Length: 287
Image (tube, rainbow, N blue to C red; front, side, top):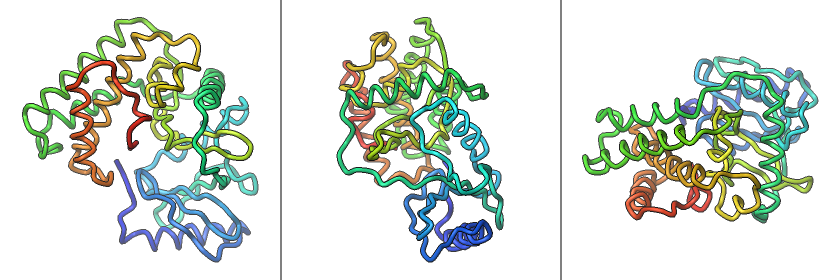
């Protein structure tokens, strides 16, 4: 997981402000929205949502191409700022993309509305031609973190064995239970959607991957799945188990920046030991 080091944030803000000025977008203030995977800024008064990372540590070009394709397919996604050329800008070593800022409503999405929006997103993604990794590549990456003690030094042997066996068995079960793979959001949990006055939009496509739709649905609250038709219930349960193991693996990564991540990781290990039915990731704190 990449993030902009705290000491570099002022330089990043200066780069974003300089870019906005060069594009005739007025900036008097920059508010840090988040600094995980990418640094996200709200630039005011032009009201631009800037996403940025160090050049070479970003997937901004992929996100921009995907956002343009999904917008053309009328998918419920955050849009690039229409006032500037839709591309990645490089300034002072930072890769910067500029997006529309959305005023989100404080109320959580209703399960039925959430499910309809996710269906619309999946339908739009079937019409976008773009290369993305298979979800099993994410499983392999998690297995490397758990296997390598230097990458997960706080994980004891018992928990290490549990995570490895879960990642392996759940991944195998999903692949054995034949499905039609398609382009997915990768992490459409509640933290990656915004309820706006115009409806739900999904954000943060850095983890976009290819796999069964149940892998995406496993990230949403359980109630959402009851409104999403055509799901394979066995595959959904195994995807929920797999997603829990994946998130637990990231929490034990020595480089993880998630607040109170080890406690969160221990909580998930407890859920895995408790057995089925597996809770959806959307019912937990998301990462």
